[in-house]
Image 1 (cartoon, rainbow, N blue to C red):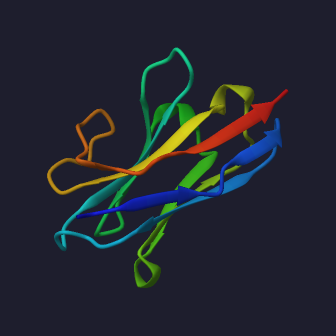
Image 2: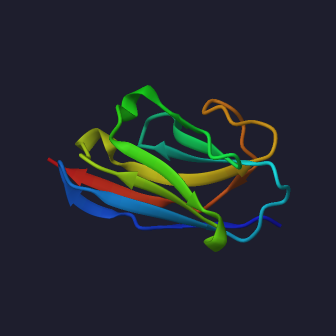
Length: 121
């Protein structure tokens, strides 16, 4: 079973930075896509960013260059560097993996438990 565990969430003031991590137990297949999603209370899930095994990245428009997704294959770890955080970034952030899709509006098969990010004004 593929397991993902997020960490790095916390509370910061507007304009601050956080770096989220997601440790993956294993990749089921050599070709994969990993992504970060988020959900704020009362709002829909939003795809934030994705990266595939080739290192190709995709970002949601609302990120506007503030976030960077990366991975360290030697550590089986996915990262999301978040800079210039805004109150509207407040949400539960989840990492996910799939082997068929890499679209941020796609259906990913494996999910972590989430880590809370709270940005105060």
